[in-house]
Length: 510
Image (cartoon, rainbow, N blue to C red; front, side, top):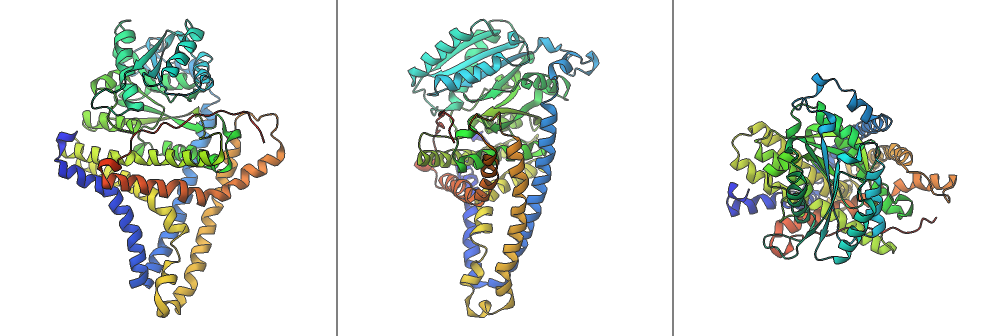
């Protein structure tokens, strides 16, 4: 979409998230010094707003959690088989006409990580002959090709097809990463599998997974059910809930809090489908994927940008349907504690680099006249506001709430408002933190089967760990988001390349 606006306009759009975030924080310092009373009132009102927003999010979280648990108990394959013909929206396609193309890009993940992901496909409650599995390896990591070949030999014959692709290194106009690997694998699957087997594109659903993604038994059943029953299924992406729990018992305390927090955020988003975009592991129709030219090969956040590619290509006629069913992924764990902390920061910064989508869709909006101004404004506001909140809210709430008292001068410091500001903000913040209790309870309910060493006392630790949430929101939330937006603002060599999150499994211990 670069042709949608000039280079200057694109750079101007790249400045938006960083300028807004830094402008907000700097303004808080300036006005705490020059207008302390007005700033104190603003801080109190903002804290109240944040309290109400926390309650709002908690309600959405509980709704999604309850619906997810209900969906996990349903035999979705039986429901698909029982669908009356008149309820099937996609040209009366039978459920057994639908093929699932499953692409797992891998780099240097261990045999154990990838094997467990493929094994979860082999035991899924769905006909495996309807699954076309693609392990997408990189030429730059020959050890990954050896692992992929080993796994193919183990599982060959269990699926409708099993293909290993090798993405060449050094292709011009690409950056090494998941997007370029996926695009290569998708085209190879199109040539070798879909066209080779003469499968109509309209009958193929693509699930693109991270190498550590393990499907739960009814994933393909509920995905097929949604595909056959939603309106306009060929203009729809399908988003499961990522649960970062594969190795949760071996994750350090901070890593556990971040893993559950990320899962909870995606649950909240599932209850607000009007704002939902694709993230990480998701599914979409193969026909649409070919029509938009597969995933962008020159960006980091291809998993979210594929939504904008489709949205712009089809003139706003694209949406994401939440399937309110989970897939299981790894929490960020490394062999050593400080390496885990470093990797957590890099992972959060990479996710925050999704702000690169802002100039992409704004340029697309300028070019595309089919999308209404209302839709353009709606998406622009909510996406930009979301990244702004990510980078600023935790800092404003937990670190900068007392700035007027510190910088407001002797006149303000002797006022009643100065005396009450810390007390009011403390009360409001404490009330909001009480909402963390519900997150703590839900996190315990989400724990996978317990290892043999897990005792009742560990429940207490897994509950009180949520007291670290303010720390994680700042160090592993706001700061990496600010860095990502600042890099986008600076541009050039400051831009982020793709960073592969290392997948590490260790023996479970206390």
